Image 1 (spheres, helix red, strand yellow):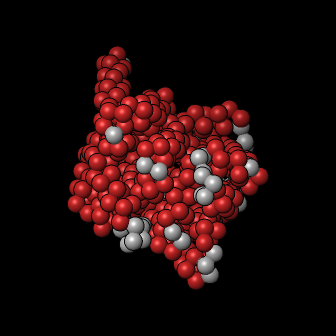
Image 2 (spheres, one colour):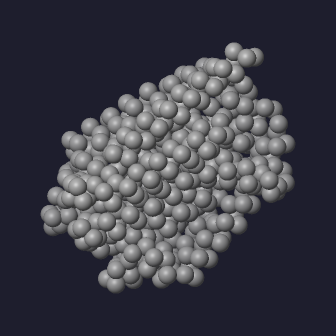
Image 3 (cartoon, rainbow, N blue to C red):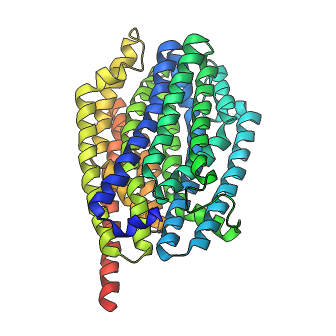
Length: 448
């Protein structure tokens, strides 16, 4: 059984074997968004770029559901396989697939049937309304494929196939690029082409992700196991913290859009769109690091090998800090050149505002990765409450307070500094939660 290496192989070797493909896969997933930004910003226009950002919170909701069920499934399957309970692992897998199918079909129906209401709620102006509704309605058609793909991709990692998991996400990006060029540049389909390209890219990734389970190359099989309601609850509970992080991304985007429209106008939203692309790539690298190591942590925690768990966590924390500092440095030095990729050369005002904001926003990455790793660790060991506290702190509580208070004190600078402030405050919480957790673990070992 390939996944047995999680409990036997050297932790450093496992770390690179799992983290590098996971980071690469998530980096390509981040590039997937950049592809949209490049084609939409350069071939359709600034208003289309702003419309994609307005619509993004709804799309983030679907990704959040995929992450909740996917990571919840991965952590539970990893622990059950670590404990040697393959039957429970089969039941968890079957339950997660049926749960994901039901939820994604419901969201797809909402996206297609209530498009205008969603756009109004997200703050679309009269000028942007046609573009926003078109993007939501067409991407909504593909939500079930996206959701199932997420679950399968997370399970592939704990099945001992991190490299194939990466290839699935790379296929999504490459096909997305091809479809964007075909639909937007060649056929001139505009925002509809961007939405179709996104959906079809994830459709191809879905086909790739399901092949190993159909051909019998995994321990878990599609036909095995049973749906169990209590497992559905546990999957959602265990993955809720990471899903909350995704929901927080949507909420953050929504709050930033509203605040920037109030202080700056549509120019501000377009600038934030370009900055958010940079942020998305940086965050995806760090999330990939955490997700890749999550399979190692969950399996060894289930096996009771706590020293291996600690070693994996230390390596991940060091790597997260190094990556975060690197992302901060790259944005600080090359923000102008990178952001120019997404914006037409004639939009000097938007470009200058985005570059200025990106250099302030970049301070968040110094500790952002450590918060992501701490949250991912608690999720992997099936302790979602502590992970949820970290996600709420960094993504909702301090963001909300910051966007209300900091612009009044610092003007527009306060908007850009909200995320760095939220990450710094959350870092203190993460350290406190990890310290108390391992202090408890030491006390338990002494008693035993």
